[in-house]
Image (cartoon, one colour):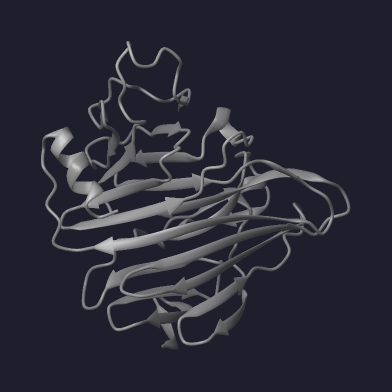
Length: 297
C-alpha cells in the first residue's frame, strides 16, 4: 500500500508490502529517505541538518538516495532540489517522482520506484534534456547509508598469471585517495571501504564493475545494490560504473550509467535493483566472506 506521511518533517509517501517499507519524498527531491524491513531499522543514512551554499543556492544532502548527473562539477552538479516534486502512484506498490526542470542546467530528473516481493526494489532513474542545446551526461545514482558499515565491491574473478595476461578492469583513484588509509581493504576477492567516525578525511574509490553488484554490510543488515554493465560503453570518471565515498560518519555507495550525448528532448535511463537482508553475520576471512555474500545473490 501507499500512504501519505511526514518523515523527519518532510512531506513523503510510505510504500509497504508487509515485509519491507520505503519512504520517498514529495516535498523535496526526488529522494528516497528510508528503506527498512517491517519493524526494522533504516539502512539509509540521515543528514537532514547539513547544508552547503553554492552559486545556485543551498544544496542539502538530506540523506538516503538521490539522482545526479555525472561528471561531477561545482556548482552544476549540486543544483538544490529543495522544491516539491510531482508524483504519480502506480497501483499499490509503485510511484513516479518527477522534479521541476532545473533552471540553470535545463535537465529534469525522474525516478520510478517499485516495491516488489519481499524486499525487492526496482529503481528507474531518468534524466531528460529540456534545454535547446545538446548535453553530455551520465545518470548517477547515489545512496547515503547509515554510519558504521562497510562498502563491498567485487573484484573480477581471480585468474593466475598463467591463465590470463591482460588486465581485467580499471580501478580509479581521486587526488584525495590514500590507499594506506586503514578504512580500505584491497583483497583478492573484494574491494572494501569501511565507514569509521574516527577518520574525518574524505576517501573515494571507483571501478568498472562488470559483476553488476555491490553491497553495504552494517551488522546485522546486508544491503545489496545491483545494476547493469554495458560492455564497450563510455562510462565517466575513467570508466567507472561503481564508486564509494566516505568521510567520518558519512558514506555513499554509487552506481553510474554510460555517458550519453542527449539532444533536446532526449533522455538517459539507469536502473538499480535493491534487496535488504537481516540477521547476517559475515566472516572476517575474505574468501569465506565472498562465498557468504554469494549466497544472498
